[in-house]
Image (tube, helix red, strand yellow):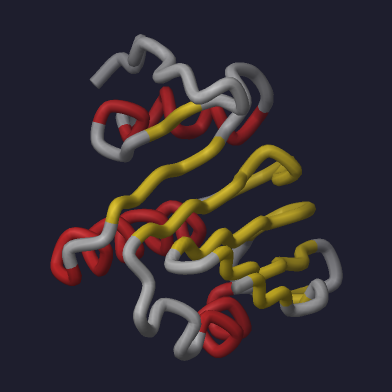
Length: 126
């Protein structure tokens, strides 16, 4: 079962795509996730996690993330934990988003992997 929604514009600089592959939901973010995206993200996510067993958030095409985006990642992590879902954050090893995850210490909290499935070592200052 493959269920794909088209890209949904969250703000002028950000869009997301939600795909369901059997019981895995993949959320792909593009552009810049800032405070202008938060409400639209929650609305678009809606019932996407119903009947899911795994959640993957793909940040590889995201160029910027600020505190609302980080809150969103932590909230998804908590939701996944509470609902018994496998949760993975897909993020390349370099770039601005990876830098923010490192600097905030979230790379040691969130289950971050790169596109090859490798878990990058956390070198965060926290």
